[in-house]
Image (cartoon, rainbow, N blue to C red; front, side):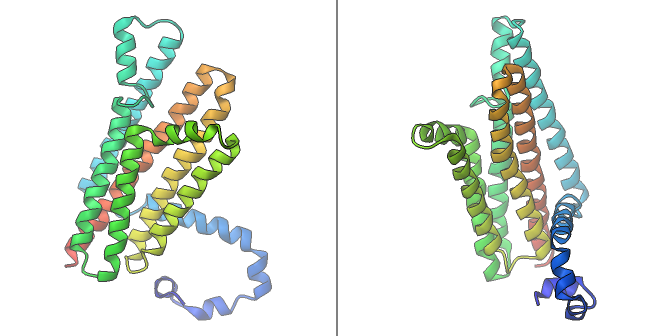
Length: 260
């Protein structure tokens, strides 16, 4: 039995063996839902220290304000209410325009995640944990570059002439699954709470970047207003997931420093 699971359950294997196979199989769907709920609760209720928690709240509110400003500017321009100056500001604050302030914020958050993860690789006292922190740093750097240059859109356009739209989305899903699997598999020597929180926030970002992006594209046929609202949901969710990831990574590295 996994030591982490044994530690979490005072009865260990005895509790597991007391449940019949029939009962376990009958409650498998409910167990999966409960497990997912516990993962999300672990990520959202991580015992962050006050400075980290305050910084995360400030960053999250800033992200929502910027994304909402971008939405308001886009809707105003769609109605024809933008002059030259307003149009220029709308592009600066646009939700998904390359080089816009909201996009640069998320790019910067992932860049900081990369630096903090590299710090964790240096400070960790378990040799087996170092590859996990390095993999996390590489992944965060890739996400930062992808957000800065809109790799998602570039790949989507590049593959659109080769694959059906549904298959293109499957490519993104497969890429996200592989990335999360690498982080999960390389984290067996990392503290369980840190591993679960980081992996969950990465998964939430993948859902926002891939799933909500596909949803935004699906509603584009309803008109530019629907597309703008879908983009706001997608970009805001991505920004909040990135901030959550940064918070739990900082917490994990600070915890490494305290245990040295």
